[in-house]
Image 1 (cartoon, rainbow, N blue to C red):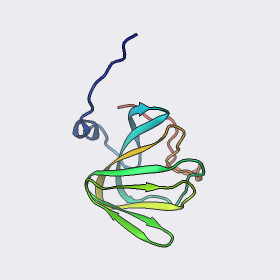
Image 2: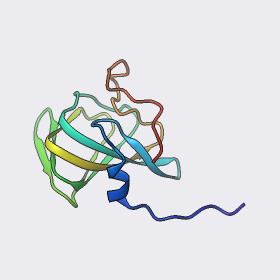
Image 3: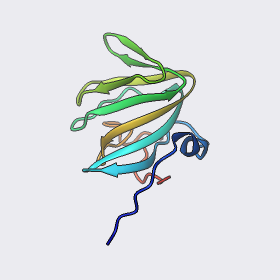
Length: 124
């Protein structure tokens, strides 16, 4: 069976996202997912026991807070947060973020009972 191969237009996909901190799946490969999310405000402090996460800024900017430092990310920049490292993304204005992480990754990591936890992600 032939696989459907299509390009993904990030601007079109981000236009379909009306809310913040609710990642959607834009693609999958090798057990990994490409997720898109809009950030605004501060997320919860959390960590992921078994997964590394990549955050790529498409539009806007945000800061990744760690317990010992803060890193500011601008469009075209990405940051990899290693598994086990506590972090909190904060976006003072709306930012569009591409995440690349294992399909098993839950957005709130060790905070599985958070009201922000998303387990059945919508596909764009």
